[in-house]
Image (tube, rainbow, N blue to C red; front, side):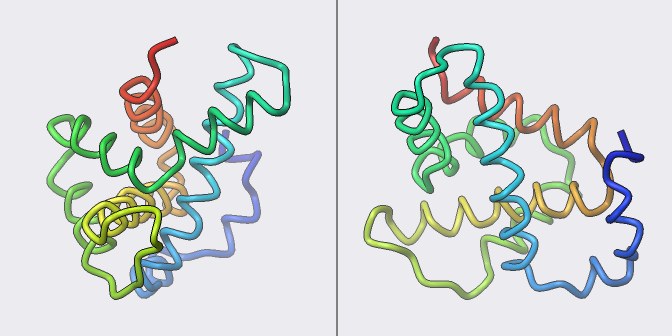
Length: 137
């Protein structure tokens, strides 16, 4: 899979370490959106339905819930990535509580960190656990 993401060769481990957790969350959010939208294709091909389902799953509230459910399956290092994002200074939208928003930022930071470090198998595993914990199809 690495050959599919050659553009990542420009990002060094040292650079990843110095990136803001919010930048990592930005990448993690984009990845999770794509992951969810791709998985939902198994359930519908109607754009309105896909949008409705993906919006619910990728919300701050749902991501915070997913993190709680998958946390026991994470390594200490992964939990540290989460905490780094959760503790980043940001402003919560009105659609979620501050705690939910910070937890979702932590979850996205973890995903962004894994993506930039090219840990694609683990990234897929974590996204799969999160997706499965939020869907009842």
